[in-house]
Image 1 (cartoon, rainbow, N blue to C red):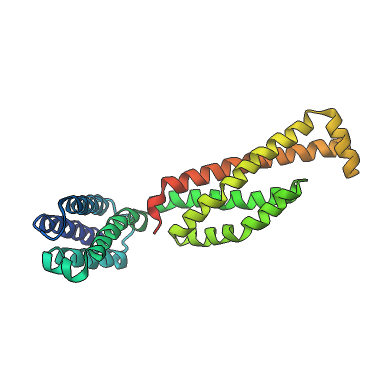
Image 2 (cartoon, one colour; image 1 turned 30 degrees about the vertical axis):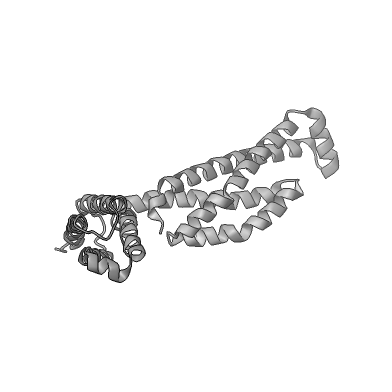
Length: 247
């Protein structure tokens, strides 16, 4: 029977951070406001790790040991002399980073959380892929130009998101709104065509196709645009909801 080590190590991490908060209360080199903020961050992190220790689904011992090492380092540095030695800014960064780890760790030790994140990640990928298809299907050249401009940041966003990089999240926030808006524009544009017999006739003449083809093509673009709008909206919402997963 495999012995699961991570819960025990994570409990130790939580205890180390709780002790660090207690030690920090006696520190004199930090002003009270700053000290209160850091103590709160440590206690929040301690609670997060204690909660996680009771709900481990993946025995990620390597990550747990990394967190233990960091928690011991913080605990040992919670004295006036050590804070002065490493510098207040560096000391603050270590605690802020540990608080961030306490939230991202749920995605390292709970498979269910990671699966939820991947669902939103896939929605974003499929939505962006569909957007590029729609840019090719659209009769408006400015959409194709916009798609070309967004191609590289989209690829970078996908690669970074896969590694749970915070840069990827920021790039996703930057690139997704434009396709969402343009999907809504395409729905309105092609709906105005299918509901106007004169527009259908003119489009058929311009394309050298039958009116039936124009109607079918327009409805296809409308449906795909609607799906794209939903995928990207859902994906962006989910990535924002699970922003704690990214470092």
